Length: 305
Picture (tube, rainbow, N blue to C red):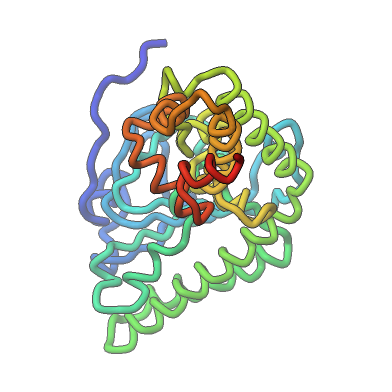
């Protein structure tokens, strides 16, 4: 099947997306709640990418089949949440019509001059991949349903001086509960997540043991995420939840362990060690080593004598 080479369709406003989905004009130009039952898949070409310049929070219910993560299936089929920040590309597939629920669309201008306008960037799940969606239990689903019901009721109300305040408070609740539920999900997926931690360690050991830094440079969080088929932010949050360190810190631990081993070889200079580790400049290596160990590479070598 030939891959679609067309650039993504860019939507700068919520009204534009409503027109593309053959929906009525939104009641409010900067925020909208779309019921999936009102969207026909014919309105958007399957397989074609869309780039939305506003936030999109999808609440999907009544999944057909089970949700699979890694090699295991999980029982939270009652509903799920996925999050997209402005500028992310979304591809519509045939499978996207296999549920019911809502999508909340929020333009950044709606958050402007409100603390949430800045705070929303701190929620890492907006950078997660679609397959890293938040799966909800029955009780969690009831809480989320209540928030969406309040949003729907408020958006049906005539706009007045209280509208924005009430809507923003509901969005804040939605994000706070989602943050809590993701923390729970990391716990309930402990077995699979521990496997991911082990694979991260194995990948880094192999990377340094095979001399890959000489070819590809320093390992990156993006590299690890691609090998594990996860988004960089989700991988870092997962590692932090289970080990107390994010992905970059894991890379630095392996880098320093390898560096100390190479520095212990008397015939290698600091510049040669830096080169073997994938650094372009020895000064960058020395600064990182000093920051992490409170001693320079030269001082470390001298301490061995």
